[in-house]
Image 1 (cartoon, rainbow, N blue to C red):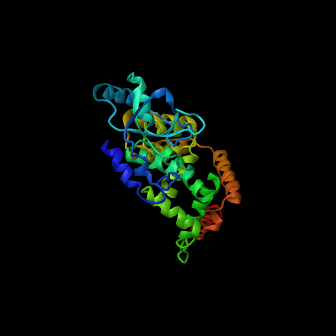
Image 2: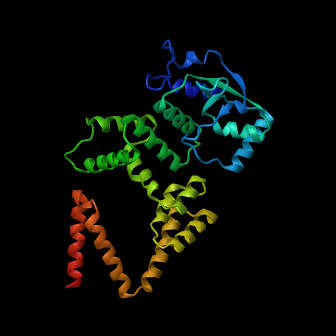
Image 3: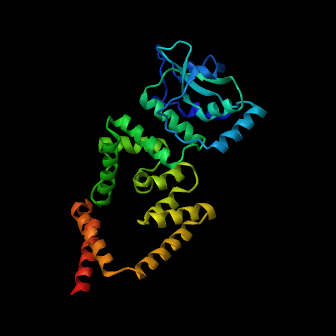
Length: 313
């Protein structure tokens, strides 16, 4: 139970402490200590941030539970309109594994029902504490928490983050001091996430195709490698490199070399009409892109345009 108590200690700030009716804080709501509750009285949270559970790891944990029992309590709260039933806050992996192990009851700590923001934060911190979230779940969870905190839909939060990144690229502009930016930065820092790294390296995960996202969710490939592979537009080639990377545990450098080989081979066989198609596609993208609003990108585009103009003269 040591890790559980460490987690509770980490929640000792006003933002995270669920309040009981008379104002007592989280530690006081746990005064009853460990209880054993039948598994069939616990309701799983369908909206929790963690979605994927590896079957092999669950079986491994189940074996540990058979040998040693459940060492860390689950956290639950009483469901107001269902007497005797409890909503699971965190500990679903232990909950699932205990079923595989044949346990009819599980050890829990009963807490006061947290609001949506506190519930999301509790789940994110607990899962990060156990390193249970895959990169996709971490991004989705952080965005859901930001959406709840800012009172915006997730799409609006993504737009805000991208705007913050565009703004900070302007040398004379500082996002610090902007109310929504301050809330965003503080909240992500509380999850040990640097906001710019989140925007540049993690947010792009949500734009990946399902064939790339699923292996990341399953922990088969690191997201940095998956991002590199996603740049291959040809679906067949993308799948080929993806399977090679997983089977052979290719390094990011190996993956880039493989992509380079495929690109060179493709270029060698390309016809003039293929280049024209690509040029027309880029031309259409240029009309819709927001890159022109970014001074740095606009300057770079201008240089590239001049190079093209010089080449075709």
